[in-house]
Length: 302
Image 1 (cartoon, one colour):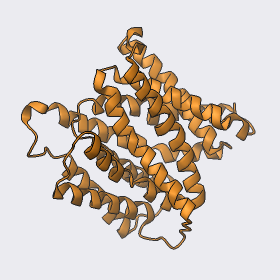
Image 2 (tube, rainbow, N blue to C red; image 1 turned 30 degrees about the horizontal axis):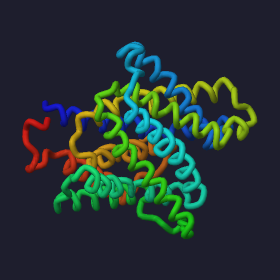
Image 3 (cartoon, rainbow, N blue to C red; image 1 turned 60 degrees about the vertical axis):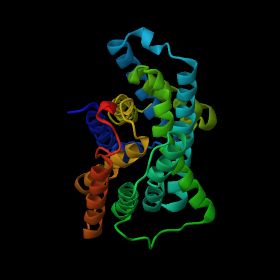
């Protein structure tokens, strides 16, 4: 198995872990958490766990990173964690969960265009078809084909697309951060730390919850930070360091939506319609197409 295929498997696993986000969000909401406090606890516990993992696997020296990597980590934290979480929660509030999810999964388009401009990546016809299949599949999976409850004002559209753009930048900025071959655990730690700091300064999330230190709420927050955050981002940046085509990353990670849908069916008795099944199939097909080795890539790239 070549190194890039292993990396795509890591991104796929990351997407599966991210698919549990909705489960933790609902559990924490039941304990009285707000969206900003849920995001804050997720990043706080995630950064803490990753710091311990970094020390255990790579040692304290791993936290010594170059200036370019540090700037990338600050951007990752502010843009891809802080601003993203604010925009996405606002989008869901303005547009509803289904439409908010659809707008979020415009991310592969932004990543592909940015990668084409910054990294000179090629987008052939098959990639464009796979990209269309992915966006369509995510839309059908998230909505079941029903947009009747959608209320999409121009500002709501702008906020939702903004969430998709900031999410897309994770792969782009993350690739830049990994260029100096820093520890993926250290990169992930800094990413979450700066995101946590940004949300703390901008939102003061502990002020939005009546009982911010409830035992069960903190337990769910810790599990959220461990499973869908620390482990997910540690694996994500480890995989990202070996991938030569950044445009493929968010498409492979979109397995997150499939996992979230399946969890919704079994954990919350949500319906699994034929339209959703078609959407899931389109997502899986797009992942397979994007994960293939491009003909114009040489074997020694892997």
